[in-house]
Amino acid sequence: MNEMFYPSEEVLKNANVKDYESIYKRSIEDREGFWAEEAEKLNWYKKWDKVLDESNKPFYKWFVGAKTNIISNAIDRHLETANRNKMALIWEGEPGDVKTYSYHALNREVSKFANVLLSMGVQKGEIVTIYMPQIPELVIAMLACAKIGAVHSVVYGGFSYEALAERIADANSRILLTADGGYRRGKATALKCIANEAMRRSPTIDVCITVKRTGDECFMENDRDFYWHNLMGMPIAGANADTVELDAEDPLFILYTSGTTGKPKGLIHTHGGYQVYTSTTFNYVFDIKPEDRWWCAADPGWITGHSYIVYGPLINGATIMLYEGAPNHPYPNRWWSMIEKYGINILYTSPTAIRGLMRFGASWVDKHDISTLRLLGSVGEPINPEAWRWYYEVVGKGKCPIMDTWWQTETGGFMITPIPTMPLKPGSATKPFFGNEIAIVDEKGEEVKANEEGTLIVKSPWPGMARTILNDPDRFIEKYWKQFEKQGWYLAGDSARKDDDGYFWIIGRIDDVLKVSGYRLGSAEIESALVSHPAVTEAAAVGLPDKLRGNSIHAFVILKQGYSSDSQLAEELKDYVAKEIGPIAKPAEIIFSDGLPKTRSGKIMRRVLKARALGQDEGDLSTLED
Ligand code: WT7
Image 1 (spheres, rainbow, N blue to C red):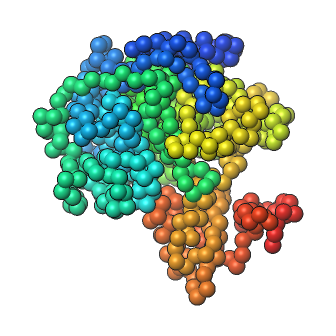
Image 2 (cartoon, rainbow, N blue to C red; image 1 turned 90 degrees about the vertical axis):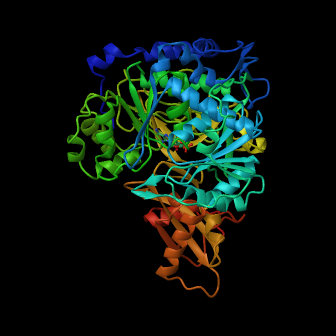
Image 3 (cartoon, protein in one colour; image 1 turned 60 degrees about the vertical axis):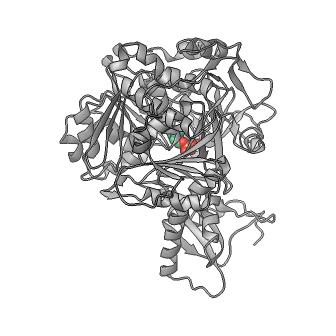
């Protein structure tokens, strides 16, 4: 896999940054100097005393002593320039309705909603849970929280009430922001009904604000439930609000992600370091120009949306596109027609989405003039060379470099990524972003030889790194920093190779985390959902390769006495998991079994199950109990 794709003259001529190697060298020799220089490009109420504080590793601090608020950079400073009249957000609903917001209008809506939150008594540092479809109010709600120093916790709108209730409880949230529903594949989801179920299990919630999107009936409880538009129409929702001055290290948001145990981890990101990291990575990697229209086709409810729909692009004064619904509704040309309609210049999406659209064939793309595209991006899982080529040739017409960005919820922004002028190899995320020293090592921490598989580690801190896990700093240490404690390295949880040219090739997770359609799920989450079903006594979930989704979930299940292993029960269990966690977690296959391979200490050996299902060598079975 060593075929190289070189940037065109056009790309080389127009790129903001041309020489990766010299900037990289500089950024490593003087990491703090590099980041200070990038931070100088932003507004601060007060500058930092110290760029990096390493006194309490691994709880690093960045821009210590600085006063800021990410909103002063994402919105406020644009109001003083011509950007005030620039489009900040173009939104299209699935039924075809359109809304646009200039920076001026975005500021007004954010300020109004900030005033609504203040009138509800929301305090600095309080965690507000947001459970919404992909509508502008989701972005407005996030920004309004940040503006007043509240901390947002966005829960993906595809999650179940159980998952929502669990996250509300962990965050101890008093306020829930939701919508009656959203549109997906022509149908309205019943989001508020799910939120109601969650609230029955969430004694901490005393205010719920609902956006009327679909107009479908849903139960509204007196004194607890309010409609967004009613509150926004009241005199309390004045169009001016102060952006609260915060410490650089004050929390901006919590985002839950799946780990190896059943309990999701609430990762904390801050105002100061995160604003520097997302804006810098976005600017260098996506080479943003004032005239660009940027489309990150992720859900704002994931880190991709937080960093590269909302914060990174807005800090750069970019115009962002947001689309509510499914890529193939009503026809598989939906995305291409929107790229043509809005003149999108940069598209950033996942390999799963690309493979999904590829299935329908090039003729759907070719119906549209998408020649405005000049750059493409990929994220979430390794991109297979076949999908890469299709994306490059059919979508990019052979002229748009593909930025394959490797990163994680924990990292806040891109960690391994090309810049547009770099020669590309299909399937490789290329090289570390500026400031990052990344290596592939063996269990002892020795760097492995070129082309050998090993564990991916990050040797140096970066401003966008998560600061800790909410309520569980020990788990933060245990999970990411324990294995290479002596060296002080960050353990990413992925395996990878580095080739002779220094290009990185991500292979996949080495822990019990599954990547299904780019979504991250823990084996343990799926297993605990299964054992909560009355028929199941034990379960083990593994991911097996899937052409479309990257991986699909296969669950081995041991039934309680008196239940028979028939296909009806298998279907029931699949639906049950989808209901418990969300449709993304629905197993592709349920395999009834009489036992599970376990170590003597009782740990399920998932790798044995996986190897068996794939008909591969089961490896060393010496620690197997039975
Ligand atoms: C995991 C993190 C970062 C936003 C979306 C996912 C996998 C991510 C790539 C890529 C190969 C990738 C890794 C990583 N991953 N990007 N370009 N190539 N693998 O965030 O849900 O926190 O998942 O996604 O396995 O550890 P996330």
